Amino acid sequence: MENILPLKALLSSPKHVVITLHQRPDADALGTGLGLAALLKKYQHQVHVIAPTAYPSFLDWLPGTSEVIVFAQGQQEKSLELLNRADVIFYVDFPTLNRLHEMETAVKNTTATKVVIDHHPTIEKFGDLVFRDPKAAAAAELLYELIEALDAQELVDQEIAECLYAGIMTDTGSFKNPNTTPRTHNVAAKLLRHGADATKVSRLVYENNSLNKLAFLGFALSHRLVVLQEYNTAYFFIRREDYEKYHLQTGDTEGLVNQALSVRDIVLAAVIKEKKDAVRLSLRSAGEVPVNLWAQEYFAGGGHKNAAGGVSHLTLEETIAKFESLVKAKKKVLNPNL
Ligand SMILES: [Mn+2]
Image 1: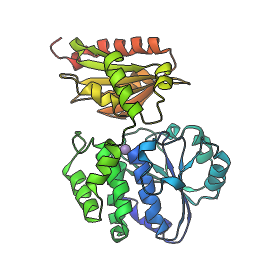
Image 2: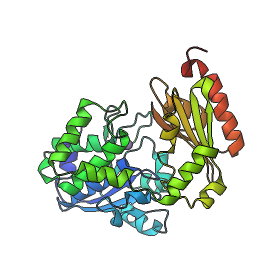
Image 3: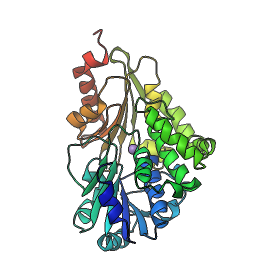
Image 4: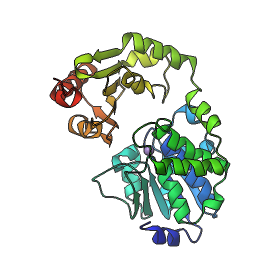
């Protein structure tokens, strides 16, 4: 593995380490960050995990979450102090530095050695030691291979294994998305051997819904789902007032986009969310529909071929219209029979 020797040298004596995640971290970012933190602590490094914004509460059970510092939740000062003191800063699971949100400038301005562990394709160049592999299904998959390359796999205990397993399980949609490879299953198998309890992790992630969230799902399916059958497209839109009415928390709309993609013949699905500061889009697709490119072209976003996100500073209605114009412009890709 390229860069492994410099990384080994870098970590050969105890360091101040900060692990940064992307804003609104998902199970892959959080699991990879926490797994890495737990591993580095075994080497006597001083390690802190900093998330720009909150992680969803359904990930509370991941070992180590209580120690995660959330920058946007009144912990700016502490974060800056740790960042400035750090010898090494890890960038986990993101392809562009703006995913650090309000932390971006502060992190960039530090003198620490920056180490990237990510699996998103990108054209942005950042980091001193870059471990980036878009063929890896999850950052967690790549981290496990990195641990092996460092010859540290003996130190992977059940907690670390479950952190990484959670990342791989969620980023592959439970080992069914097209990013799932023999390599993915191979790493997952090793994590099980390290003691990860797959049933427990699955239940904690997928069968941990609040009643509010399920009530909202029922409402959204009945009143917020639009199916453009001709274009094999389905999308949800969520109004600000819906968030209040159903007391939605960070993460509560996660998975909604998959409901839209589950409609028969649908190859493009979206959730269009009216947030305080902007309208945010989550896009999913099946097959050869490149939502990362479309997110980039229309909504200043990016991601993977079949899973991407973007943002719009128009109103909700205008954003919906723009999304529908995208759909029409791409109709030949969405429905070759048109
Ligand atoms: Mn990921």
